[in-house]
Image 1 (cartoon, one colour):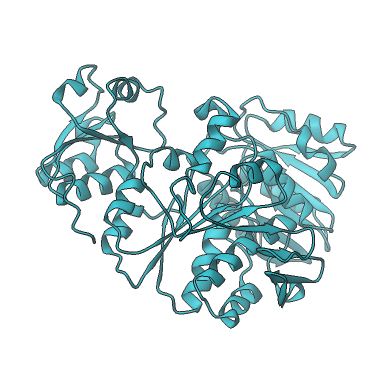
Image 2 (cartoon, helix red, strand yellow):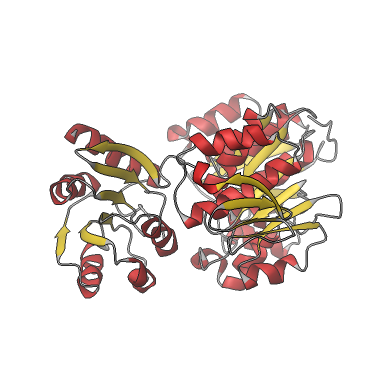
Length: 450
């Protein structure tokens, strides 16, 4: 860890706990800052706050005092999920106090370079692929960020011999000021999280933060097939590495129907790749480009691509049963992700879908429903999804109570040669605390049937 002294003896407010807040508070305390933590959860039921208090960190729990910022704080570190409309955050910005997320802290203390990966879809798969390739190539990677491991904890332990592979949400990136990855990746841009950002432009600007501070010593891998991404790439000062799935090009990394090319040179056959789907081809191009820029051996890259079958909860192959292939795509919390999953298969699909009702239309899925033979829908959007399925000409539809119930119905509708696919097109929060819980319950239900 870099001996970072800029925060020594400064008063810092950490707003919101969870894993990132706890890690940020502990790191700030270690850096010599005077840390105060504020969390809505009452102290008696807040084990994280109790632990921080035992370490000499000031904690204020159970409420957010209106006059909290009158304590003379010089920096606010917020949980990424807390919106900027939050009264304390709005007051901090009005007072011109810097507001950051723990990702910025990670960058400030890290001896290791970063690979920063963001985009509307494909972040988790790309991040995992890059990590696996670098691990196989003995490049000593560490993995962190939105994928589940708090970045500032990882960065505090990293050395110059490591490289930190980070999945970055727009929420995290909005809270960065100097963050400068050695390699930045922007997989794609689509409408997402507009309830948080207020507009697509604000959302896209947050994503662009992944390359905003880069210079000519850095690399920016971006989607050359999306004009909106290209317009943002034009503003980057990094060395640009475009990727495209529309045929061989002389620049960046590209793919045609049979092969993948690096700067116009053949490097591997697509038939040797285990991971299905056009959307995954984009993720693969990003990952291969990043691995090559880190001088990862091509043999290591090929070995990973030949064996990697997907990230948990993202078009994850569960098992084959009675000739039915079962896939868990619980991480598909929007229509675009479900559209990508549907287009990855040529077989008849029994689709399990539904979840939190945000009032969004399912029309984006219509052109991708041709292989869907049956729909089992659940959650708040269950009946709406069934109406949509019927409008697509799908006659076999069942309304289920929850994902466990839906699994039983879907199994009865499936025959040998079918794909049974959980790809909800909706968030999980109407019934489950996370898409991971929803996906795990689906897997458990499948295994019980088997």
